[in-house]
Image (cartoon, rainbow, N blue to C red; front, side):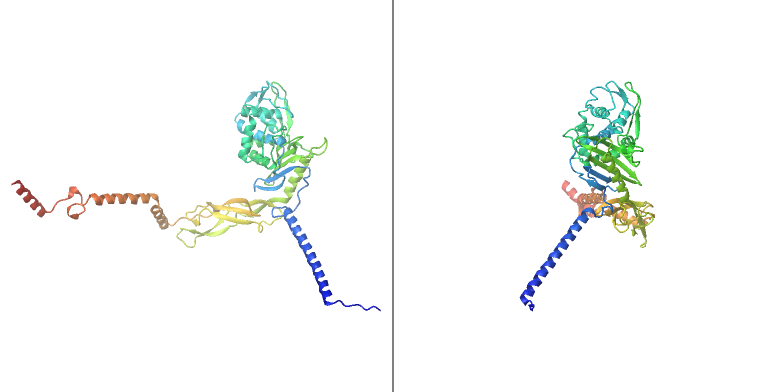
Length: 477
């Protein structure tokens, strides 16, 4: 029978050390896993992250989805990657043409070969000698996306097609689109003509402010009346989100703004999506091309992305116009108990992730125009500004008002006027002038006998007069 040997104290300590090493190693692995999960979770989540993951974007190169009201980027991909602009060039062409020619819309121009320089690719068939209205040219380029119309408009704006890109580049710099360089007004490929999705967003946002541009880009279709060189020409909006009524791409909430493709730049789709009071500007660029009959990824992705935004973001009421933000004392009324509430003039609604609680997840900060509320105050008077902060960023602001009128106490009002005068420059000037006159008076108005009087009114005493006459008489003798 073999007897079991009990481990010695030294062996026991060695076993304990090995066990502790295993435990420490296991704990280290768990901590590393937790840290990795936290990092990945923060990358995918965060305060602005919606509850739902964005749609697959593997077939598009660059994306920006921007809420124009809160001025927040809702989603982006490769927003600053330098890419070819393709048809998005026509947004800048259309914007500048609308600004330059808005007073000449009914004017008819006659085309020449110089006017049509560079007109290739997608054309509507304009020819030298043709007479056409400027409004029809704008509609043809902005709604229809035709290159020959773009060239004519560039010529009318700059005097030549080749000179127009300089105007485009200057405007891009002014808007902060510093990574954009234009070489032509059409978007036909040029290896030196580049942009980014973020720059395109800036330019499209500026075009949104142009009423004429937005009216043309929102048309479903347009018919150019017959000219001296052609019969009527009808076309649909180049952006199928707007014109593909009944088709797979149509989105009734979209307005334009641009679409097209080149082999080098891929597909681009830029649109303004309006729904439930929200205005989201979507830029999808450098998307894959497909064979005829296949679904165009730029359109299908844009629709999925906009649907995702509609589910994940919404307007939430942050503060009701009936609820006072705070109650503050009012000074200079003559009554120590004067106080009033400060309000927003209308319900403050902010575009936020739909899953957050607007009452607990945001911060409200206000700033008064002065250090305190001071009478007089008129009913409805603006007294400061409220800012809404979410995830460390200002997402909205609103004026704050008072709803009661307060008159200033008349005695306190008088004291304030006196104080203001005594602290004013006019009072200081008055004091200086007074002191100057006083010095002159004291210096030049001292008469005999040490009295302050004028020379004209000085009369010597009678006694001194007698002595003077006696002395004068003795001198004569």
